[in-house]
Image (cartoon, rainbow, N blue to C red):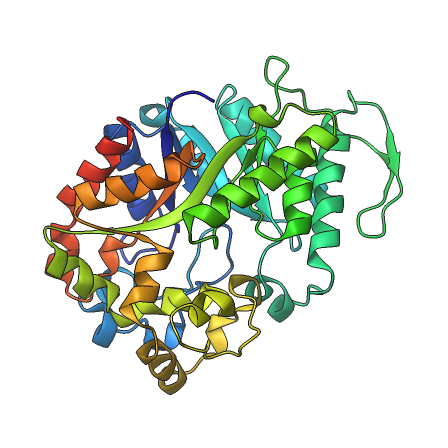
Length: 382
């Protein structure tokens, strides 16, 4: 499967000073620490409830990012980064494109364009999306997995068309004499990285994906079982199961010492990320998910409607043990030891989201920059 690699993921939120300042800094960090890739998210608003993204909980950081829902458009941002020669070594991707809100023909075009602009370094991460980015904007949120499978099949059909007219029946994305005439770069299309957790999505990954990049799987043994399911589906589809890259999208919370890390994990903003975890993960820690015992997690989370009192009540119920399950945490050596456990069950590519910067005390969040860089450099040696 090859050496262990990593990429850095950025939320591309607008800052007070520049729409590109934070993303450019993150991409420079990726370059400086030897990352293989740089990724941006695809959201219309934040997964953090806006009601608690205030100076009270963000401190001075609220002056840098006054509105957490001011999310930039990902493919546009990648085009901007692709035009800057300083990032020409990094592969660039979206983690992950919303397969429900975006028409697959437009996604196929965007990904192919970035692939051409970067001379073969474009990556298409794609998933079903989330309710918060669909239903409030008038996009039907029913049968998202069925829509997703058709979206990926449509992208493959357009890329494989050779410029010929494409007609394809589909309950969601029918094609009638459609044309896709952008060329591949030297015979290659962007790799498709599928964000998949449930059994049906794992089977879809095996049939169509070049990589598997789950978000809410939180234990190594679950990862190993799901990876086996992906590889079985690939084999059943006549594909090489070992060719699918086993990846993971996960936050890293590090700091100078254990006390700083636990302080970050106990902050209101970081604890709000636990709302994206499924109810069964909460149940393992003896707590019912505030949104219901059957809550599915991030796919059905609508954070913009959670008011301040509710957000504070919900986050007060998050035990520290739950936070430690859903992210890599600790000093750099502790984090690397945790990643190694996942590597030993099959993980070969980690997409890192820097959760350390959400420490409620800005000084400690800034002080975590050096330990975070040490983690990234250490990943190259796993």
